[in-house]
Image (spheres, protein in one colour):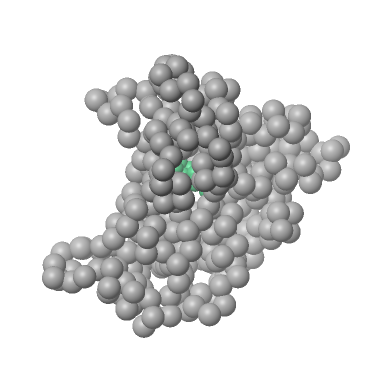
Length: 319
Ligand code: 13P
Ligand code: SF4
């Protein structure tokens, strides 16, 4: 889709508002989106919030999903009668890429007695091979809900899996996937930063490496991190997750000091912790997606029905 078709004189914010009404569209956005996309969203949230919103949406005919592909696909699985559009179809995820359905099927075959728990960051086909899905918000609840006598395969995020084993005491076999953003944080540089900011709380997403998480004062999903900053009596925070969320954190706690957790130095970039997939969605592509109602998420109905089962189990556990 070419952005050259956009009249440069257009006020894109006004046009998007107009098109939302004309198309009967609702805009769902993840906290890792650019600030301008966060600001125009009807609902902003973490993976769990956005799945619930997508499932509950009644009035709109169109869901414009400003996030990555697996999120928009989840919206389509849970609310198939809506037209679901994603500004850029190439907005993928390193975790989803790491665990194709055929590979998960082979892993299951060699562990026939195991239950399969998949993090929501996976494709519909991988979801369809899973017994239950979780997000970082409800993963602990989901694991604790499983029968104690069944062994567990956990895919695709090994860091979230390790953190869950520590929290629940439940051993699991882990798929070797990682988030390309969260594994870049530097333990050494975070420790240095903590020394320079002794009042600061270091907060981190469970997709970070265990070596980084062991220094965290609080670990949680994007929404929990946001709530922690807003509600804590502390005034300074080192934030170990994708930097897009700092926009919402600043809005929720305008007087608090927020410091991006440093990453390992590579190619001269020492502070960028942005998800390249999330950032494929731009204001221009968001406008075009609403204008043209494309690119759309389309799913084979038999696959959708199989992928819906473990998602509904997740939503029942975390209700
Ligand atoms: P949550 O929104 O569940 O915190 O997940 C973060 C993430 O990496 C989404 O891709
Ligand atoms: Fe995937 Fe990580 Fe990007 Fe989230 S931040 S979409 S887990 S690559």
